[in-house]
Image 1 (cartoon, rainbow, N blue to C red):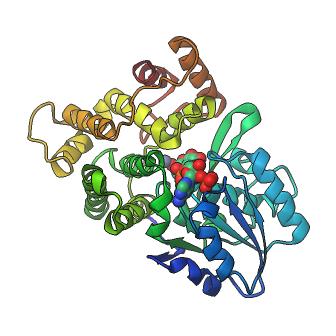
Image 2: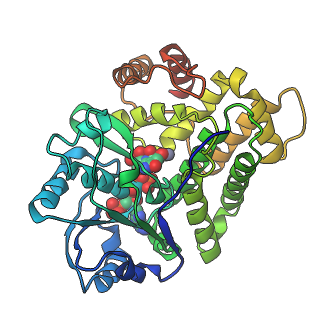
Image 3: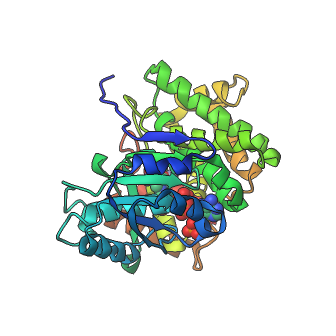
Length: 382
Ligand code: NZQ
Ligand code: ZN
């Protein structure tokens, strides 16, 4: 094991914490508040942040859509450049926070912002960001990742850079009270797959990372089993903290990473508009079955330590079945039905996009090439 680890995002966790932004955003900042389709206006978050920002010069940019597009975000980039914005407050779920990361970096670049996710431009500077999280799922509030889409070409690409990681993240579980069921479930599933992508690889004897990953998975299982009690402060706080810890760098330090489920899932979202979390549930069980030879030992460990399954020669496949049953218990589908074309045409399209995006050697062993993706999709597409 050899790694560097720092998570520099200050977390302000708990009820009533939104007000603390007035002590966290530097005085005299010229702030751009970025948000989505307006849920924050209906649940009091906007009122709370307005009250906290009275001493600041600030303006707002709304309309960042789920799976944020650069077509929309570039309008915010123009505002930042014209008005010399020097602090961005991102208020929303993963889409708003990811979109704000793109805006923060693109505003400090003279070229086309799309050069950032394509890797043509290396970020050298970015406007500082603070986040108020309203949907626990992605971990974007305290990590350096972002995923943005170019609607014109249906390209959904990720980039990572420490310069866009939020300086602080306010996590008040009360904001979850207005979340639709679908989004609450998306949060459980996305966090679950984030842990899996960093855990179901090959055993390396990392006791701390494995043990903590298992604690997070068990916590998500408990929350899913206790789903009927979701209108409860403790339930909300547990989901918010678990989803954050699932992708804040800690369990991923010093271990192999997979992320193939995410890369294939991103194509399903870009082509067919499937919610991010649901794209993962569609891909992951078929991918795990396809990659059993590499993942057997870790799946067996997960079966024992997370699901309490009994020893058998089928322990690894039983674990995959248990993962699939976990999704089904939340009424989350594990087959793609949203494509409005024949199964073969849909698979060809996804494979074409993966190839275009250079996703031709995925997984912790680079063992998932286009041929394996085709096999996985043959199982995952209805
Ligand atoms: O836009 P508004 O009106 O706010 O409504 C949103 C949106 O329609 C709504 N919502 C959010 N908080 C709410 C609320 N509605 C009522 N009450 C609240 N408190 O929820 C809808 C979905 O929001 P979105 O931000 O799109 O969801 P999520 O947090 O799941 O983010 C998904 C995006 O994150 C990316 C995904 O690819 C996708 O684009 N990811 C980012 C990652 C990262 N940065 O590390 C990792 C992830 O794997 C993922 O790829
Ligand atoms: Zn995810």
